[in-house]
Image (cartoon, rainbow, N blue to C red; front, side, top):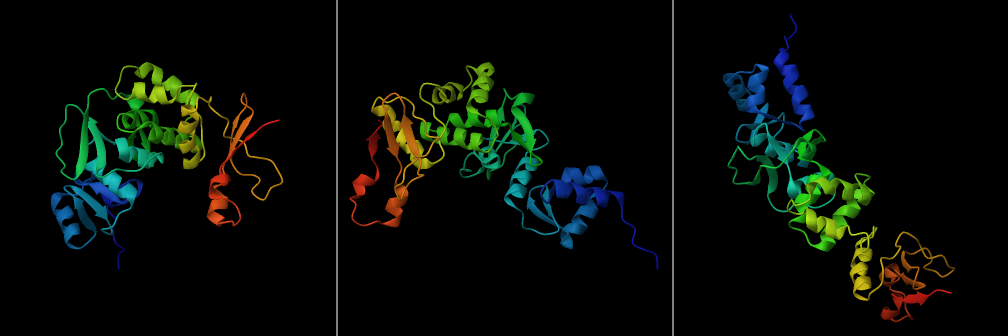
Length: 274
């Protein structure tokens, strides 16, 4: 008995689906040589599953978050990129807010009620990239787009996340913003990155402390060191103000442990240096 003949388009389609997180577009299948009747047949027998108009999951109907993002981009046509909050989530520097967001060339106007589609006239090749095989706005463009919506604390958190993940450091980000001067969001982002006030932090508690320090007229502290002493909570994070010989320590873990015999207010203190 002769073996089953595997069509070249079938091999290519499976490879494409694997690269695209389990999803393919109808136009892609047609370009590979699978006709309309072949697509309908595979939908009927469960090899393809329609998840958006003209977008199919291959093999099974469920898709990952990356598959959902890829499907959203594919549904908006060949010149479309994940952007804004969805791009921030893909880069790992923020949370997706509501509908998946996609940016398209200004000459196009796809209508997708379940997506937030942005028509963009100013995107250049330097603004665009591919991450995890998903077309997406680059990190700098994503931060600029986010700066239009976010407050200072949220922007600081996004910049810190980008630095922790090794995506970009504050100095490189400042340089990358120079040619974008005048675009929406750039001024706000540069304001957050002001060398006189911006400090890299490791936690939400540290970020919440910084506005208090600024309001008190203190300069940007060094929050990258730890207290070194022999007390039970030694090794905790601290904010060191060198000029003022002042150290503000984080004793939050002591509160979590519920230690007795110490007033709650005394767990967060400032101690003068020698």
